[in-house]
Amino acid sequence: MLNGKVALVTGAGRGIGREIARTLAREGAAVIINYNGSRERAEEAKRMIEEEGGQASLYQCNVSDFAACEAMARDLIKEYGHIDILVNNAGITRDGLIMKMKEEDFDAVLDINLKGTFNTIRHFSRQMLKQKSGRIINISSVSGILGNAGQANYAASKAGVIGLTKTMARELASRGITVNAVAPGFVDTEMTKVLSDEVKEAACKQIPLGRFGQPSDIAEMVAFLASEKAAYITGQVISVDGGMNM
Ligand code: NAP
Image 1 (cartoon, rainbow, N blue to C red):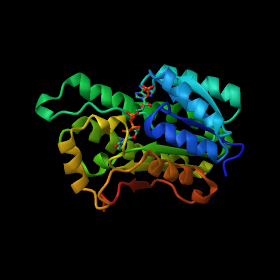
Image 2 (cartoon, protein in one colour):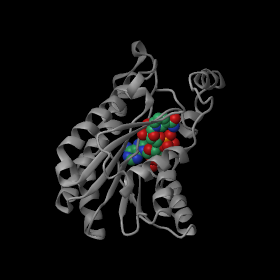
Image 3 (spheres, helix red, strand yellow):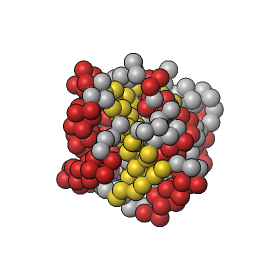
């Protein structure tokens, strides 16, 4: 149970982030839904949580902006007094083969997926250090473990998230803060809706369980890592991918 806990989920207006926010709220946490561009979707997510009896608020912030993340940490800590769970879920893809990949597509993916994760940890861990407790959960990807043709930028960013996770786990462990990563495989969201049927079929052939995952598959793992039950787990990368990485 997460009663009395405050959780920030980045990119929580839609997709996997929304499901993570709903699941943490169902467990009793007061959830802050961070969004960047999708205000209406974020408001919808907040309504859903409230209809389920949960507590949610909204905070707009582009996680790739260091100063904006600093302001988000200042504002939320002032409002709530503590922050117990940080889920770095915000992420984008800009796929393409390396010979055609534009510099701005490489930079945009690294800025949001990797630097965005650094930015929030940088600003929220100070409060967690003071509290001598906290849970940080970073959403990586099977691409960051195995690599994936056409995703040089994305795979590099998600592999970077794994290095960041393990390093943060080592730096923060002595203060009772755990840091773990969840590495999803193919999950049914807007991110994968853009894939052609051909690509989806080929993807399914690489998944031992033979199907895409649902956002709830990822959210349940995040909720577990955020709970007391996972108190002795840190620095780990947990694959939730239908068996792709084994
Ligand atoms: P999605 O449906 O495309 O949603 C992406 C989310 O990220 C949105 O809520 C979006 O918010 C947010 N976001 C993007 N840029 C942002 C920024 N600069 N600042 C704050 N938020 C930002 O993607 P998803 O499938 O739910 O993916 C969620 C996470 O899981 C990502 O890290 C992704 O890489 C990872 N993942 C997904 C899959 C998959 O198959 N779907 C597989 C492995 C890993 P706005 O709309 O408000 O901009």
